[in-house]
Image (cartoon, rainbow, N blue to C red):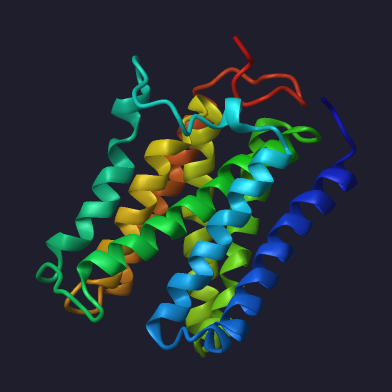
Length: 246
């Protein structure tokens, strides 16, 4: 179903703003619920995951999400490899990773919840909403930028410097663009949740700071890869779902 660009942008923005509000609200009420310290972030991620599930249900996008597809034949699994490599490359430099409090298991859980809430929100709800008004390329680009901007939530959960914040916004926008290009091409969000969680996991638990140059190389590579994914797929009519119903 087609809609106007303004309506699509407003709905996509509203989804992201509500998610941001839930993060603020969850962190605010967590102490009243007896949740403190690191566990406040876990609680906020759980709330956002529930919100993402609710939004995808409300928009009736489950059949187009690919969440329940365990395997796709053809090119899809092979074309996941760059994202898998990106998630693992952080282990190669400078010396692997080490457990941090409160333990690897809880970090894995909270970052899996991050993968669930961010992928369902950005790569399913927001991307498909934008597809009702924009071409695939513009939908993926705008969704990628919105994904980067949603990391402004770091202002609520920490105190990053302006330089660090701007860097994070650019890097995450490109990462979101490349993931969005894959989702547009294959509508298979399940592996994107897993590689997203794995990438966050390995980056957060690295033992030493990763050189900025390494971030730049990886980001430019993913940008080129996302462009290639879009270029290599026939354009569907504006308003068409990511994958037409069978």
